Picture 1: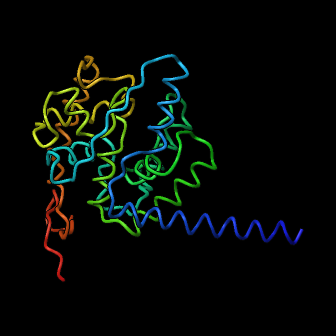
Picture 2: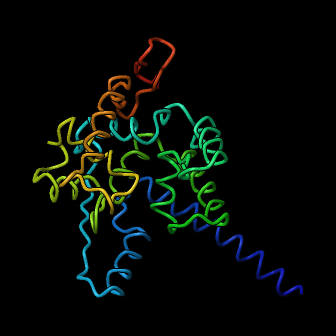
Length: 245
């Protein structure tokens, strides 16, 4: 029993040490591979398909400034205000799910980033617990700019396509920095299910969602650069001010 407790203590200590170290490392280094990318490769091989893995890391300043605004409008409009968890969205999703119909999630961009980079897909309570833990860590150690940068580089955006640079190249024949406002809204419209919906050949439903997202983008200011804070109280739309050093 004592040996089992000792092993358990060492196991827990090792998990916390390695997880914190991983978050610190990814604060500075590009994320070139995620668990989901590897899982998709095994799924493709198991289905007898040709292996597809398109991913190119780019910094946030090499991505169209419309892209962060588009994903906030579509996925998480309070991204700059919350600390990883949007309780309003969670409560709203819970009420919707209780009333029946298609299940809605309340995941923020921070939660999706934690899941994409450190975890596996799924809806179990264990996985959700790890997701909350890693979300807390990245919100504590990373800036909002770094979270957005990792999110836009790691999220699945099509069959074997990961990140906005690969999506821009394969679906728009351009670089991420050259994506237009409608392009970014179109990509954001597919994110709830990028393997079902395509930004290269959008369905009428996706085109309607694209229009709705562009309308929402009008109420979201441009994404702040590193060293700027979001101050929603100074105007209805919110402005940015330089952080004092």
